[in-house]
Amino acid sequence: MVHVEATFGDSPVDRCDGLMRIYGVAVRGVEPLPTALQVDVYRAMHHYLGAIRTAGTTEANAVVGQMKMDPIEDVPGDGGTIREDGRVIRDMGYFEIKSASESKYPWDHHGLPHVIPADQNYRPLNEGECPMMKQP
Image (tube, rainbow, N blue to C red; front, side, top):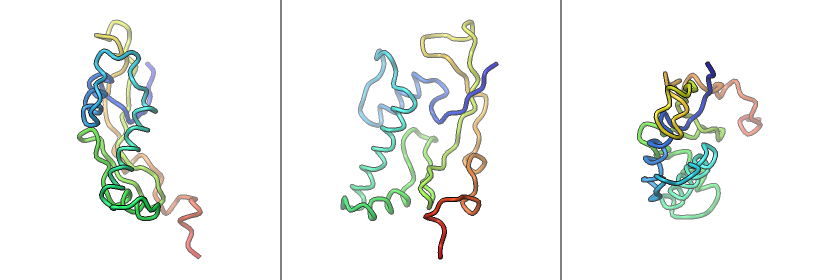
């Protein structure tokens, strides 16, 4: 059995549909489906543009500050936050790759046996080596 970690989908088709509905994009029948990287870029831009709207400016420091204050809201239950050092903190799925006999339709390649909570996924801020976090 192969295990993978990702932030994208217990059912790629259903998950992608849910995410893209939020952004007003249809993906049913689209081949190939967007990759996790493409979806993450889309999610990041959605959060960035929302921060611009909320902050009322495109000034970089104000927008970054707003992005860190606002929760990441995309797929219900799959949001997250941006930590002080800029790292996105979110739950991660621990997936198992399905056998061919377990797959029910195209793109049904993996199952989600459990979710790893965000607080167990990332090194604590005080243990990091981010130079921006080092105060003189």
